[in-house]
Length: 177
Image (cartoon, rainbow, N blue to C red; front, side, top):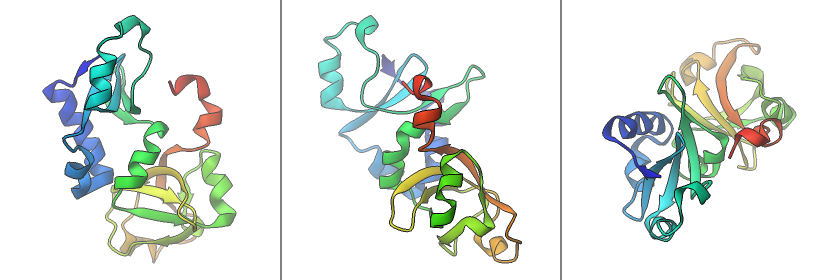
C-alpha cells in the first residue's frame, strides 16, 4: 500500500473530475487520502491509514472505499464500490423511470424513453449518476448526448452509456474486492 504517484493521481483526478466536477476539492479534503494497493485505488481517512500501517501488507486485503482500479494498459476505471462517494459529490444526476430501473440494474445503457428527469445543462461526455425518482443511486455512466440534443432524439436512442450499476454486486461479486 502506497500513496499515488503523480501520473497515477493525474489519471484518477481526470476520471473523478468527469463526475464530481468542481466538487473535487471538497471530495479530497485534508482528512482523506488516496492510496494504491494491488492496482486498486482506495479512498481512506488518514487516521485509518495510520492504524493500517501497523498491519503487514500481505495481511491487508483492502482499506477504506475502493474507488477503482488501474487496468493492465494503465487506464483508471471506476468501480461500482465508489457509488456512495459519487452519490455524495456528483454534479450531474439523471433520474430513471421506475419501469426502467431493472433495465439499468441488468447492465443495459439508458435510453431516451427511460429518462425520468435530468438537468438542462448537462454536456456531452459528462459523467452522471443514475438515480431512481426517490434519489436512490442505481449506477453511473457517461452522457452520449448533451441535454439539448436529448430533447430532439427518438425514444430508442442511447443517452447514457452505463459504466457501472448496483447489479454488479450480484453479477461480479468475486471481482469487486
